[in-house]
Image (cartoon, rainbow, N blue to C red; front, side, top):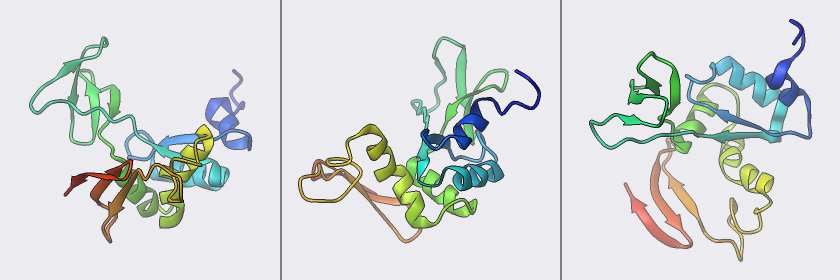
Length: 157
């Protein structure tokens, strides 16, 4: 690749046919990068997580060596990123706090936009008659207080 070629990130940001999935945790991507991606992609930006949750007080080996939680991300012994500790509600809050999206845009980026991208928006990522009724209830600070799957409450904080 030549020094001035955009590479994969630049190509994704410049091509309106492509969506961009971001791990919006402030570790994988700097807040300014999230803002830039949001401006470039608009409704093509999706918020995702590569969350790894280990049992308490345990390290796990996924083939690349033991991983551990450093308090902000999952890492290999040498400090290399191995995954996030990010939840989608935290991704939503971060996108708003980073100045990348409005609250409504961030909610869409974790619900309707991914469902639309996967072609399942008639039944997922939306609240409409005939949909599965998978949803989370958030408090005023965008923390999950209830989770519902197929219309059944499965979690309350």
